[in-house]
Structures are given as C-alpha cells and as structure tokens.
Amino acid sequence: MQIHLSNSDGVPIYLQIMNQVKYLAACGRLESGMQLPSVRKLADQLLVNPNTVARAYRELESEGVLTTRPGAGVFVATDGSPLARREQLRILQDRVDQLLAEASHMQIDVETLVKLLRQRGRLTHPASGASNHE
Image 1: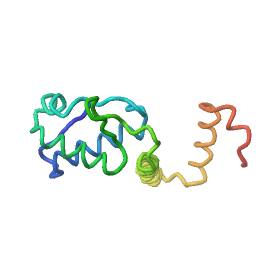
Image 2 (image 1 turned 90 degrees about the horizontal axis):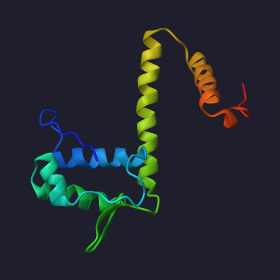
Image 3 (image 1 turned 30 degrees about the horizontal axis):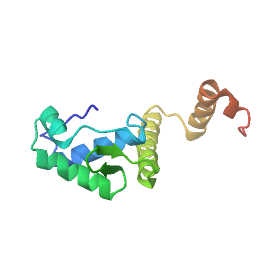
C-alpha cells in the first residue's frame, strides 16, 4: 500500500492517511477483504507515531471503509461501503471539473467533450457503446 504524506500542506497526517486509503479503496487498488498493514507496520513505513495510524484506522472503521477482526488485523470492508461509491463519484467529479476547466481554456465546448467521451467509451468498452444515443 503506497501512501505519501506531506508535512507542508497543513492537512493532519491522520486525515492524509484516511483520504489516501479511501481513494485506494474507491479506485480498486485496495480490494474488498484485503488485509492492510498493522498499525505498527504502517507507522514504521510512514515514519509516524502509531497513534496517528490507529486514529486513521478507527475513523475509517467508523465510516465503514475498514473492518477490524480481533486477532487477525484490519481489512477493507467487504460489504461494499456506500462511502466507497461516494468517494468514486467524488474522484470522478474532481476529474470532470479539471477536464471542463482545461477545455474552457482551449475554447472547446461541452458538446464536443461529450462526443469525445462517447468515442473513447466505445473504444474502451465496445459492448456498452452500441446503445449510446447521439
């Protein structure tokens, strides 16, 4: 599990850990049921206090992203947390906002972007592209 921390952005370390674990779970890099490193192991890896990792894990568990199995460790929740879906949509919304801003700078309208998305969708997902309405 790759987590990168920044001491200069003003975001508390435990929140950085939480946000990155949510992102990794939402994008599928942390699969449902996958075991995460122990608190001590991740703290050693990130060079942070174990209490910081423990807090992040507790918060993620309370949000339904992680689950703790006594004696076994910490795992990505297997019940398909709605948080993971919300995080996926948030990530995509951020990327759409970036794409719209870039297109605006290039003076490309939304209709052209939609056409490009449909074309790319047909290339990457041919079966689903056949039913698109244009």
